[in-house]
Each structure stands twice: as C-alpha cells, then as structure tokens.
Length: 295
Image (cartoon, rainbow, N blue to C red; front, top):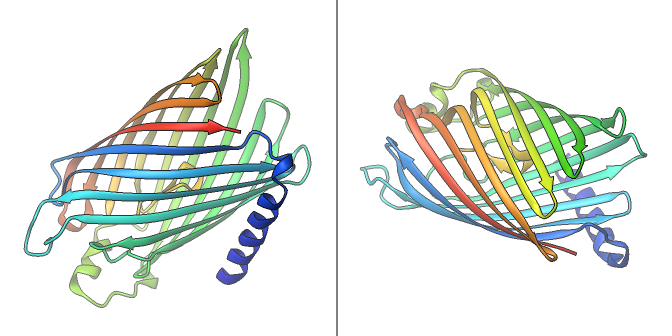
C-alpha cells in the first residue's frame, strides 16, 4: 500500500511538470523560522530552514516542502549533542468537478538524531465538497507509523469565504481527533517505553483560523484549544513527532504583496508538556519569515 501510494504521487507530479505551459496560480516559497523554548528540560532555541512549491495544472495540484531544523539542546547524560531534523511533506489534490476534490498526503521524518521517532512516516487521504461558492467541507484521515507506535487522526474542516467591499476573508473551523495505538508499540528500550507512557490514548482539539486580504496586504490569526500529541497539522505540512502534549496554540500573521512576491511574517505561541519527563508549562515561541513567489 505504501509503495502504491508513493508511485501514484510520483507519476502525478511528473505529469504536472511535463505540461508547465498550462500552470496557473503556482508558487514557490522560502522560509526561515526562529524557535525559543522556555521551561524545557531538553531544548533552548533553534532555527528551521524550509523550501516549498505549489504547482497547479488544470484540475491537478501538487505541493512539496522540505524542512531542516537545528535546535540547541540542554546537555544531560542522555543528550550529548544538538538536535538535527530533516522532514519532507507532499500533497496531491485533484478536482473531480466543481464540487468534489480529493487529496493524498505523504510525510517523512527523514532524520532525527535524538528521539526514537526518527524515520517515521505518515499518510493521508481526504475528500472535499463545496456546498456553494462560499462554503467548502473537507474530511481527511491520516495514518502515522512512528516506528515504535502508530496513530490514527481524523480531521474535519469547514471553510467559509466572503468579502466586504474590497476586503476578502476566509474563516476556517477545524476539528481533530487523534488515537494513539499503544497496542502497536514496538519498544525495545526503557526510553522508548517512557517516550509515550504518559500520552493519552485519545485526543480531541478544535481550532479556528481567519485570513483576510485587502488590496496588497494580508492579515490572519488562528488558535487551537484542547490537548493534542503526535498531531499532523497545517493540512499535512507539519508532523509533531516529539513527545510533547500541546494544550494551546495561538498564531498571528501579516503580509504584503510586492509585484509577484509576497512577504509574510508569522508568530506562533504554544504551551506544552514534555511527556517523558512529566514537565508541564513548556512555552514555545516561533517567529517565521516567508518569501513567496507566484508564477
């Protein structure tokens, strides 16, 4: 099943790039993120470098992103080096008609030199239905193989788009249900057993996002309330593979169109508990700069 899914996505991507003359509303992005941790027993600060592309061709869409993260750790008998992480995300979407669309996702933690979820992979399959020009529904089911355990995640999303004179805006409501299948645990060491021992079997979290566009300016904010761990976020473009149980997330973003470029700044605040250490009230602050080019 895994090989078949990857083959379908690869063949689709080759087809997209083969006919670039009809590509519309496509884009490429570079981003740089600074991370700061407070009250953590493992991490102090770090940076993330990322590159992504979003290719459209008629009814097809293919997205891919690569991230490399470097985080300074708090040294201990177990932590003797800084954290290095490489991840890749892909998504294929196809519009069946004006109302229905499907999406397939694939995520891979290519490298993580600290935690036992190194090499983890996740897959997603979803369907969207547009009730009308304003309202769209999406349901996506994810399966993640974190090597020493498995998770099943169900996402339900409602998008509402409208405008007020020159102000265009979109409101998104999100519900997530995460099941951690501890019966699938394949632990071989004491640390691997402790890695998920304090995680709940099930999590439910809800979120809201708002994005607006006025002339050449962008503004948005978002929030998630409710505990979650080992979650897949951002429509399959963030995989939280460390043992951190988040209970709140707040985000704010602004942007400006400059010709074919869009320059954005985002700030995200999160509060979490480091599960292996029963260490609550860990605060994570992320500042991200994104340069996007449309072609």
